Length: 171
Length: 158
Image (cartoon, rainbow over all chains, first blue to last red; front, side, top):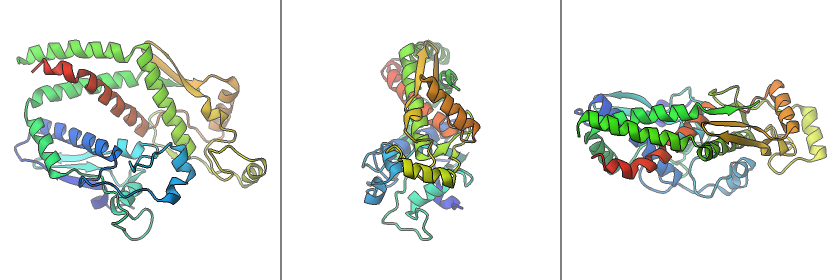
């Protein structure tokens, strides 16, 4: 089973942030991680190691229509599933629960183990986290006008739920 | 800005967004994306028990069927041993979206392919639903599109 320390990231935030502001920060951090990862950028701001030739030749790689830029997306589920694990004064924890179906895959990418018993840092693609300067920027934005942002996010969630509720599958 | 002013302007703007994002064209785009997610996940080898469920590996193929597939040949998007609801590839290729204003349905345009989908579902390999993570993917795309739309308009509220 994946270890929590490998599949979750604890982000330090100022104690002065309200719960509402921490919600905004957490949401923006997750969105930024998703954006960085889609461009092949790690939590440190560096580029991910390239995919192996063996993986690029695999049926799954071709069926998923993947490009050569490592973006940690096969079905796209793993990246879409990053969530807020907890939020309390001074810190936010984001990532995956150990029960998540992609938890082992997350750990494999984070430490470079990919199903092997030992980690391999040279093959690792750590993605849970952001460079501190990006976190500082997100916090600064959340502090300004946070009441309106929270209302906006709530309204946005309501609209998106309504739109997604209009999608049906047959049979 | 007065909080009441902000709320009123926000509601007006978001009502307009709802109209735009539930138009026939927008629902078609959303449906096409949903259909593509279902096809991709199934071709990689995962099924979904029902709407919003977590994906799981499709039931393995039987040994006699694997031998038959090896002898007969299969589409390039599968292999004789792989369980990904692909033989010729026609069934998954046929999944598409039909949209109207405020509604989109993911399904099959060819009755034969729809029949196949029913058989494989009844045979223990359900696949034609959006998983929990696929709904999140669509949510993320919608959020990005709506935010992009509103980005410039919101500057006027500050």
